[in-house]
Image 1: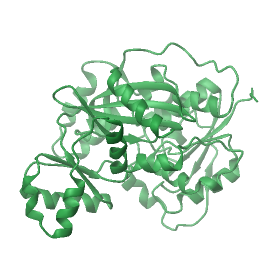
Image 2 (image 1 turned 90 degrees about the vertical axis):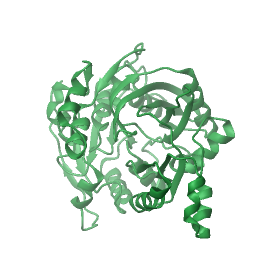
Image 3 (image 1 turned 60 degrees about the vertical axis):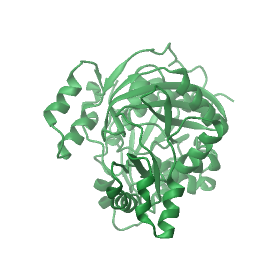
Image 4 (image 1 turned 180 degrees about the vertical axis):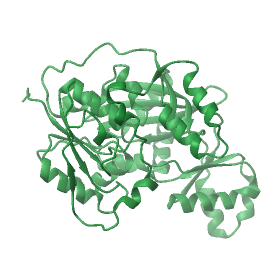
Length: 401
């Protein structure tokens, strides 16, 4: 049964870079009441003119996060719960059967989500489907470790690429160029990631290619592909100069991967391009991606489409012919990275955001929120130390359009 009243939507991860374009889109397209959830009153979303009600809770990495979200759901009873980050998606998976029946939430099937969060399992699916991927050496290294033969890595084809097996909500990777550097780097990544390390062949190049998809019960509804021309960290992470990109090869492979997982909700499938022009799968991110603002501004309204389908909203008026070209820079993320990296020039980073000129991820009508830096995990871990169940609520002013 369709409905005509504006929905109420609880948007999690209000500290994240993508929280503002998601909330802006939902507010503009659906006239939704936005209940923004962040880690403090200074979270980006809670400072936005598009946030009608603000609530604070612990970071998604906190063991009590899922319980806090359940408490917020009891208080506000939104029509839709929308997680934006890895941590919140994983936490909600753990309490999936306790989510209120009258609150919609577009989580992928549990088994499919487990595969997406496990880079080795993702690689096995890609292998079965004959989707290009880096050569895999994780099992070989595991055997070497178990046998106490660390010097035998010399027979591996360096350079190698190391990354956390399970998604940590942050980039934990390293390139290793020489056998003499392997074990020390491996142990550093393992300690940082707190999980097993995946060992793969290194795919050269700084650019990542992503295919964003929205699925509804196994059926694809929207597709948007982009190229990260510049990102932080430089070997791949969050795009800071991103452009609309089309290549049927990666679009087809992304669809085949998610089709095989009977996917539901949003996801970003990431690839790198080899020197010979072929592509290698990097990972499946089961969430809205950090540079989502380019998709939204280009007419690919994933958040609004998800909400309209989940809530059976009648006659959505936000549809238009999406742009086939476009580019955007994300200066705040770029300058944050450059300021904290010893080998980066802030001036060069600033210049890369200004030239060649293009659209910026800034909304001058919501400037206070857009100039609030996205908060890192390290920054917010200390915000809640008592582990108690309390909920801090802030009723944010509603600005006129």
